[in-house]
Image 1 (cartoon, rainbow, N blue to C red):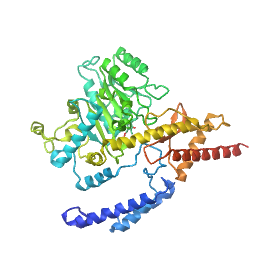
Image 2 (image 1 turned 120 degrees about the vertical axis):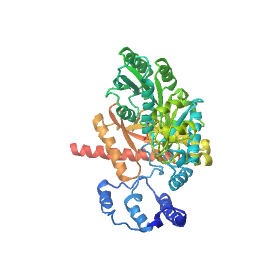
Image 3 (image 1 turned 180 degrees about the vertical axis):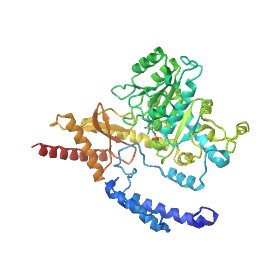
Image 4 (image 1 turned 135 degrees about the vertical axis):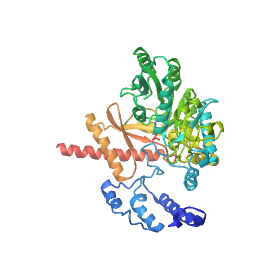
Amino acid sequence: MRSHLLNGLTAEHYRSSVTEGVERVAAKLATTDRPFTGVTVDALAPRVDAIDLDRPLGDTAAVLDELEDVYLKDAVYFHHPRYLAHLNCPVVIPAVLGEAVLSAVNSSLDTWDQSAGGTLIERKLIDWTARRIGLGPAADGVFTSGGTQSNLQALLLAREEAKPGRAGWEKGDSLAKLRIFASEVSHFSVQKAAKLLGLSADSVVSIPVDHDKRLRTVALARELERCRYDGLVPMAVVATAGTTDFGSIDPLPEIAGLCAQYDTWLHVDAAYGCGLLASLKYRDRIAGIDRADSVTVDYHKSFFQPVSSSALLVRDAATLRHATYHAEYLNPRRMVRERIPNQVDKSLQTTRRFDALKLWLTLRVMGADGIGQLFDEVCDLAQEGFRLLAADPRYDVVVEPSLSTLVFRYIPAAVTDPAEIDRANLYARKALFASGEAVVAGTKADGRHYLKFTLLNPETTAADIAAVLDLIAGHAEQYLGESLDRAS
Ligand SMILES: *Cc1c(COP(=O)(O)O)cnc(C)c1O
């Protein structure tokens, strides 16, 4: 069994074993002709169930054969140009190389004595990102597992900063007074964070959006004023720079002005829009992000990094102390005086992956411009897709994209019942998924069911978009035809 431990004696076994796995994936990539096989849960579950975990196969090749059957064969492949559904990107090769290196060395980024250079690499990438945002000389941050954790930590810091000494906050006040303001299309992790932070059930004030799905600043101003009038404490405003559903970017400069006026923490959730930090063409779309107190970035969404790779950045490094606890065995207080960099002092996690390595290798091989160019390409593709949809009488499209998302709905001229149109769109999405020919997402806008493309693959072309729109229309028409038959 010791032959399975990775060490100096098994280096050759490591090389051949990982190479075997890489070969399988490479073969899969080369032959995958659709993003999904359309396999159903009922078909796949028995194959997984049948495997007896207490009877190992021992041999790597046999295990990879089995893996082919239960996973690789039917996985959903994000690299395929007709995977257009969620915020999943195809990944860049330097980052995948980083993933292989970081899991083999297996550094843990909580303390210097478990990572050494890893800590310095992560800190340098944090500084690099903070500079791109423009957070100023006191900025800092830490890598996280994803946008959900970044948002949670940002709101923890905001909560701690909001409590004592603030207008409206007197002794005896409870967390129940704190309010967070976020648009009605902000990410649900804001609500989860509020719950985890012990805030009241009505702590997140939902601000309406305009026609372009951007937070209405007039409504925000009114709610901030009301909050103050009611003797409550505005703890934070969450501006979304790239909403998950529409890619819309809240008006950051105006929101920053209101935050300054009401002395409120500004968190910018740029989990999606962070790709613009590297953009050569569209950086100005997130102008004003430099005025944030904290920023969420998901490199695993728009920097073409494998899951997970994400970070929280803060304007003032001192605010990270709200996540600091010292343990004698790990990061005793004296290490701060000795200037030993222990990243756990800034993190909600303890043991933590060296995810930063993936971004490091990406920047060293491709450069930031290389990433920015890929993101610009998908933003351009979304514009092209928007023009196609706007010119297509079969479809209604919601907003002109600020990033790379298109939300649209099949609207047959002959059908006027909106509920029937809802059902046709829902059916089309399911039928397309079952065919495996393309994968698209769905959402609701203005109370109706819509379909969604999240374009993150520069290999996707306008012809792919046109072809998928034809497929969707075909499925929807089939549904409506059958439904006519049912009615008659
Ligand atoms: C995806 C997303 C999140 C959550 O990030 P995870 O990495 O999935 O945890 C938060 N906010 C926005 C705007 C997102 O798009």
